[in-house]
Image 1 (cartoon, rainbow, N blue to C red):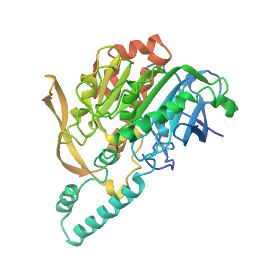
Image 2 (cartoon, rainbow, N blue to C red; image 1 turned 45 degrees about the vertical axis):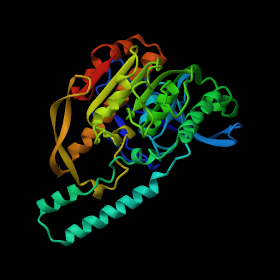
Image 3 (tube, rainbow, N blue to C red; image 1 turned 180 degrees about the horizontal axis):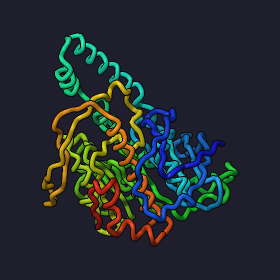
Length: 404
């Protein structure tokens, strides 16, 4: 067993698919004033637990993170993105645990699938950069040529998991349901969990492919898969959710039966692989969900990987240049004018870029924790926070918020 103290203003950066912990970095948080440091809990971890599914004759590996004292606490089942693993997203999940939640992270069948793909992409990019350097170009011309190369992280994971089948989708959902089925038996096997699990208040959260999984559990449907809704789930957080498109099976009718409270989170640079990489595609789930405790948050400058809690997925040498953007008003398909970032060129990355990523991630943690407190703990102050105008203050106000 290991214990860690989760701090509000410090978060360790973690890769999507890596398990190594990086140095924590101080961030500027826009936490509500009632998120006091006195509420923090030390985090206990069961890194390797196994659940057996008799119907599928499958052993499912899970990691469990829990507050080391007190209880019981609401439970969050977290579904990782394509190719990540139960070791990923620790900077996010341990923050939730520090605020008084038990987090259980199943390892889906696609776990760790990105490692080889990433290694190949990095090697290819390095080779292409070396060829350009051999041309003895000027610095500006070299930077421009490098900027034209396909980004190592462009749609990584999402573009690959699109080849998954409805059977794969269902297996991911069944992993979540196996965890829910096992909540009563877990404390019998792991004594440290006795008195920790509030099995009446359960949320499912996920990123990318995990968001797709979470939305299916919330009641979203596709013509290729019957409803997977689970009444035990009281709230859902979908980070980088997918919109309407044949590749994912979603239609404009897919969310009509989503009645649980749900928070959809994305970013102005969180491009999908549909609609010419337009981030507004990720607004579809909110747009087509029925009214009632639905939230949509888009963080200006947030990328697909921002929600993982770190930039460690890519080698530093692959990240020396970054696109530059300016915010422009765009009228979307729903007749609303929103600010969207448009690429204007490239620049050398500086410490400010990384600080900006960390600040956004701090806002992601704050917003998600407030939502969970509102709907799993029935905290009236947090309900005021998410239902009022306070969400708009996240990320220094560089955020778009919609409610219905």
